[in-house]
Length: 208
Ligand code: MN3
Image (cartoon, rainbow, N blue to C red; front, side, top):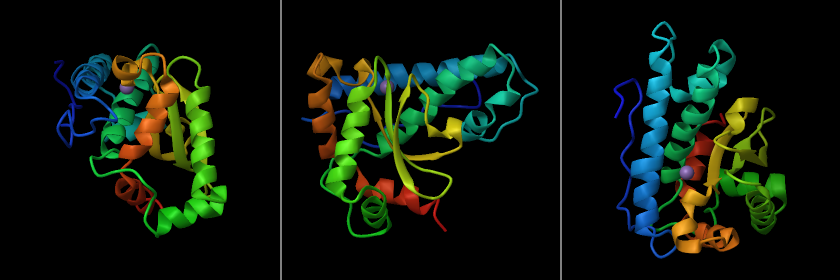
């Protein structure tokens, strides 16, 4: 592991915690190999610019234009990968699924999508529409409204200065061992492990 500013956060639960929806082997490889590689490559890229100052991975992603190429592309991809996966682990839980409890999040979903069912339909469409590798994102836009957007590779709404509160990884590495080419089955299963309490916290941190 490359020494540096960033480190791999521990998975907040056991590898098999999300069974049967997400299998232990996928979680192990995804966290221990894929996420670790993003952290390692981010540190490696930043090592070339010891004069660069930053406080967090968000800070880097919000200020990509201050980073010279080719480090900028490396930070976009690997910093994005680090940010996205760090969030992804927390928005899943063994006791997840269902719908958000009555509160800020359920209210915002109804206000901005009409209903939870319409939100889910739109999010599913975004996740299914990703061609190749990428993510589906629920985010708060600059007008403090919720929106859904898909993004290629490790891009996320921070690149448009919007703030993600929920993301779904639809790279094949996230599901192929268990679901093979059936991305739709993975997306359907994933709803059973969504940690709505964390998504609510993510939203609450943004809305005054
Ligand atoms: Mn991934």
